Image (cartoon, rainbow, N blue to C red):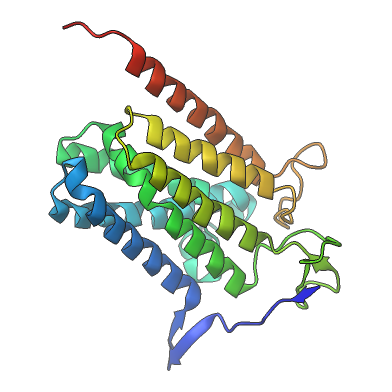
Length: 263
């Protein structure tokens, strides 16, 4: 059995100013996306100078969408009782699915600015995202949040601030699957020319499957619990559409690619 290594979520405090590990993970995510984008920009026919606006717009989408999504998907009753909680970001609470919607809207605006087709840009952006997802899950681990359900497996981890039962370190599972594995898969897949929709489809399918599976060992959100059948969680419900969308996009990509075009 492992024991959670308590890590101070604050890296440094200068009077009222506190630098949190979780915030640094977001910075790592945006810098990684920028650096990876620069590596692929020329091959994609993109002016590298445009990466700044892509990452800036994407960051706004992540932060606004992630917060709004969390409030709507996971804490709507509290929001109705106290609408100001929407801006209380220091209390925590971000949603990947909300952040994804925010990024999709931000990239729609960005594609218009660049004069690109929307899915051409989404296919370019998708491989830049998983490193940030992995960094975010590491931030969850450091914060001691989103722990898993009880387990008797050898790598079960004791979270003393939760209870005395070994639990799945589910945030580390997500860091591995959504970060390392998904990045490796999508980056490798996108290294060669693929039909439009394919890279976005693989990203959506991969994330949806990985998140759906991890939800079986992740403790449901306390304020929601299981939302149906004593096993379905909100994370599963929000991830299933991604699996379907991923399959549809991959199908469209390769069916469209094989359809004879008029000269």
